[in-house]
Image (cartoon, rainbow, N blue to C red; front, side, top):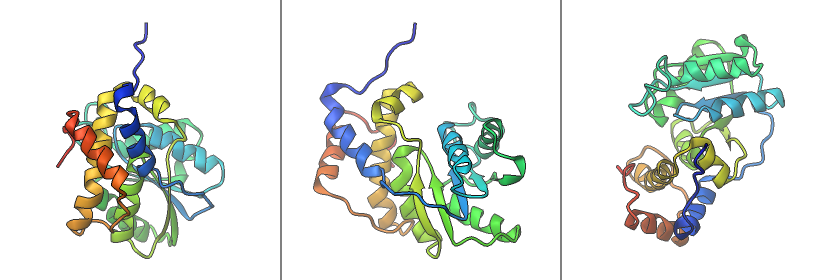
Length: 219
């Protein structure tokens, strides 16, 4: 019997506010490359494969080494496992490049840019594929690290409840949402990313979830 995981109703409004904030709500159009950002979430590879089959880009770069939270799940590295998943889903092996060294989002983009240059592949536009709650941070970081690149953001089109069910751990999802919200302002202040709008209702939701104990992913 599977235990249902769900967002507690007492937290739902705040969690929904952060969930919506991190979704860039971009309308996708064909681009030169898809860049899949490594994480614990294999849905990134699924989304990349779906977009490839839709003709949104002719090639994919998966980028990511390992974090302490992913090494047991993806022992050969996040990007390697993502490639294997995309190939299982029908993406030709030759359409996928692997960048296996990046350990943070800035490196995801700088190392991907270097890899494409080494391969002689010129790109001016990309679709960034990430976990749903990483879209805004990915966008802000890429615009800082690779400002000449035209970027759009994408994730698997799941509702909050469906995403929580797919991960199977509501506390983990909420902690990650809170951590990514902090990183939007903190990384801009540190020069790692461009500034993003930060509405009062987002700050209130962020602070409410911290008060509720969701602090494990704070810097």
